Length: 67
Image 1: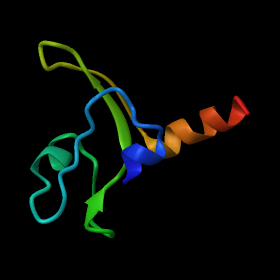
Image 2 (image 1 turned 90 degrees about the vertical axis):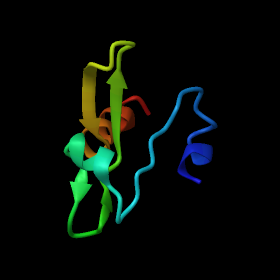
Image 3 (image 1 turned 135 degrees about the horizontal axis):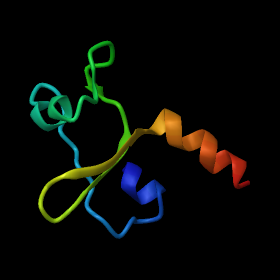
């Protein structure tokens, strides 16, 4: 499982697979070519407002810079 490969992250992860995909599409992360979601980090506050959204392709290069 992807979450386990990250070291058992201490926060909830959303998985919304095809054919459902309703939440993934609402967040604008659906990838038609693969029929799955693009991996992303989304931070939602207690009121349900998205405060941060980046797809993995934007985050991974920044992590690589840290070594």
